[in-house]
Length: 99
Image (cartoon, rainbow, N blue to C red; front, side, top):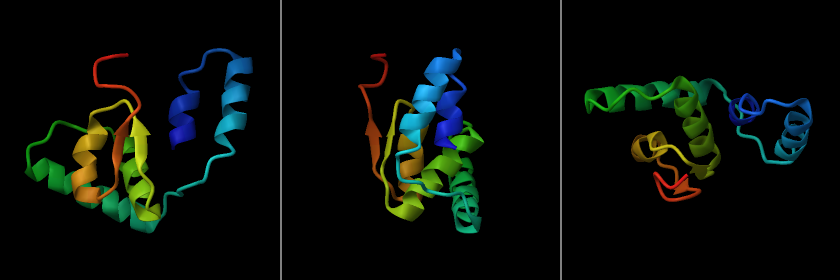
C-alpha cells in the first residue's frame, strides 16, 4: 500500500524505478484479514467521534503497521488520529504545514 501510494506520485520512469528499488528493501506489513478488521474497527471508532473522513489507504497502512508493531513515518494528520484507536507510533517527517 505504501509503495503504491508513493510510486503514483512519481511522473518519470527512471525516478519510479529508483524509488521502487529502494522501497523493495523495506520490511513489509501485509494487509491480511486481521489488518482489515482493525481498519474497520478504527473507522467505526473515528466515525463515532465525528472525525473527518480518512482515506481507506491510510486506515490500511496504519492497521498493517500496528499489527507488526511498526510506527508510521508520515506527513499526514490522519495518522495522528489513527494512532489512538490502532495503537502505533505516529511520527511526522517534518512539522505539519512546513513542506
